[in-house]
Image 1 (cartoon, rainbow over the protein chains, first blue to last red):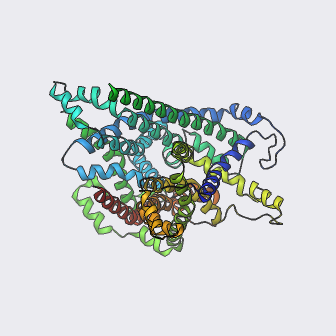
Image 2 (spheres, each protein chain N blue to C red):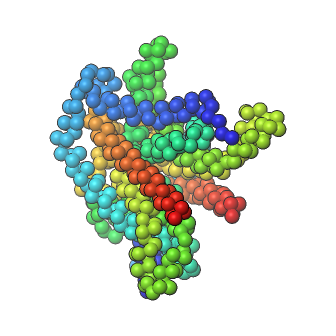
Length: 271
Length: 296
């Protein structure tokens, strides 16, 4: 017996107001004509203009996208492999160490991950830049991919894979043709998670970027430390918009897929 | 063959880019500070083989760790991080529980939308979400303007660059981590238990305390750990919202490295922080394990 009470309605309203008002204010004031961000002086899109004419931001955005695409793709491959190892491969020497290393980045403070990777790169004489950020982001985001994919693998009916093997498929073909299509949604959400983590990361990138590469969060960081700025409000609005469109369309697609699957299951039962 | 490659590739990656970097941090934390590039003198020379290790053990003096105990900045920063993490975990629970409870009681067809609304901020840039509070909390910010307009205050409040702003920032950014596990334990709860409690003469409020809260215990514990553990090492929130008066160890480590360029001390700070974190992480693991066994 669940009753939706006035208390529930009030706490949901206040809770979601708390979650969304700060972002809403940011969006509204990105269209403010005044440079003084806290005083409303009429509607204007000028800050979007100054943002797009700022070569520093454009370059940083390109570096950020390059790092995010490369690191999330490598992290998805390595993370999916790690998930398969955790769920499917039985005993092997160093298994405890392996699972420890997979889960550790999830709880590791970013300052420590960043510091340790920087000291490694300096120790082996690797010049810091885009490449070192990619290595760093891959390492911490593969843990997240491994967790997402392994939770799907655990609930997966293994007999399908065994049937493929019995029918003569090689282990790799069985994975490619049977397992991968079934775990694909988890692999895709793992990739998206890794991609977002990379786009978002300030601390690890600051340690591993060196003077030659600047990502968008590093750029935003150096701007906002001096205070609120209308260009950053405009940039934030664009980023919030992209995420909102992405998340809403992803949830609509999964909803449609669920409805279709349910319809197919009903049809199959009715035969 | 394929199996060996499957294990070897991620294993080698993690060894090279996760374990080895830690050993380097440990090694540098035991080195001597020097005015050079890189700014430390290694006390362990592996190239000298066994003799190098012997010399290292003979010269081992933990001077950076001893330094951490002599300057009270460091232990104050550790304590202050733990205190801020603990208090903000409680605050996040107080704000998050009613939201999770409301979601669990909401009509079925609302739930996917409510769920999406909780997850959406989680995908939005952390830095931007923290930044959004700078404009709200500053002395000429939106909150002060609103309160002045209401007539509740006559002079602007100072909130930005105080610990209060740090607490607001933490509750705001970590709220989804608290809501989601509590919601999932409340959602699984059998509603007829409440009905039974009320039939047996329980008031709605005491049914909530005696039935609902104990049954969501696992969600509460998970949510608290998911907030407490990452907040201890937090850097962005205290730097943007806390001002110079808020001491947190993540910020100290950052400044030690980037501003003071003292790598051995920064490494020693990192080693101690990790040792402190091991306690809640192990407790969390044990709790999760117990929960899994209980479910089986």
